[in-house]
Amino acid sequence: MNTGQLTFAALLAGMLVRWREAVTVAVATVVVALALSLVLPSSYRAAASFVTTDAGVQLPRGLGDLAAEPGLGGLASQLGLGITKDPSESPAFYVALLNSRELLTRLVLSRFPDPQSRATADSADLVGFFRIRSDDRARAVEIAVKRLRHSLRSSADLRTNLVTVQVDARWPSLSADIANRAVALVSTFNREQRLSRARARREFLESRVAAAVAELRAAEDSQRRFYERNRLWQNSPTLLVEERRVRRQVETANDLYLTLRRESESARIDEVNTTPVITVVDEAVTPRRRQWPQRTLILLTAALLGGVLGMLWAAARELFTHWERQNPQEADALRHTAARVGHEATAVFRRQRRSVGSPPR
Image (cartoon, rainbow, N blue to C red; front, side):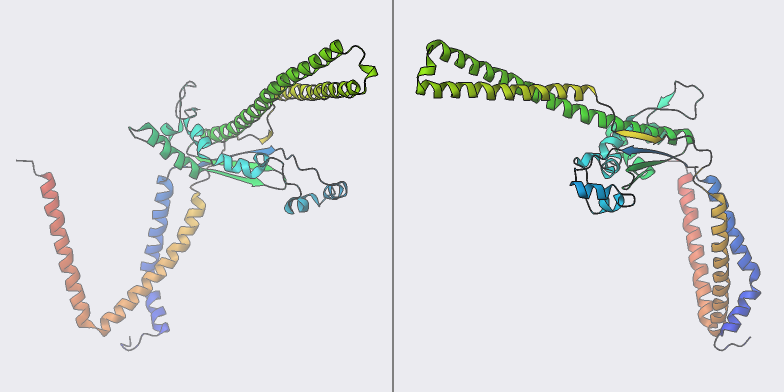
């Protein structure tokens, strides 16, 4: 071979000569990938979805009719015409809730059936399933929350208000249980939130009703005393004005009392009728096929990567051989240096083994 400048044709010819080395590198890459796919723990994915209510604001009549037309509801939503009165009813809120530390902590502390045990009574929380060993319980829960945040994914479709929860776990039944438990915790949060709001509203109205009753009784007592003191008030212009004023106070207090009483009864009904504001569309079921590792995809990727690495290995070998022919003295010095470093490293490694294996004096 010409010892001058290495041409592309010469490089290609040298790579073809070393086809055995390239194939060896490619096969070794595939074998390593196969071994990793067998060693890596399996991961199963389960998904659950639910729909949220969207109490939109009242639009003007013409604009509301336009937004109700087919195909224009999504446009109205994108333009901000269908925004909810309460931000806690939007799908984006539920996505944030599913990723919140409070809900993830409750999910970590929840107990799930042990898929490795045949006894149905065996259960553990996610700290145990994640095999977190720590004497500090709070620290163990914190680590479990971080791992769960990477394993749980939530997304929302703003057009349909559909929220989807995906959970990856090592066992198929556990992934489904975690997804369903997450949806249940969201529903529980909704019930607690609505119940607390209804209770606060009911207690406030009850206090206002009591105050309105007292005001009404005071106004009626004032009217009764006026009539007792003034038997012939119809003949006096001053007493006529005074009587109208007293009667107006009674009517105002009575109207206020009736209004607050109706609102109080409505609040009582709302507090009792605390139905969930989410509707489960799909419950998570136990997956039959693992999500990861996908051995077929890994082997195909490894074969492609191994072929590229094999060609690069053959090209690098040819380039080094050409450089060695061009610079024999530097190549000899490099080989001697590498051999010396190898001997020194071997000697150090042997001394370390002897010091570790020798009994203490």
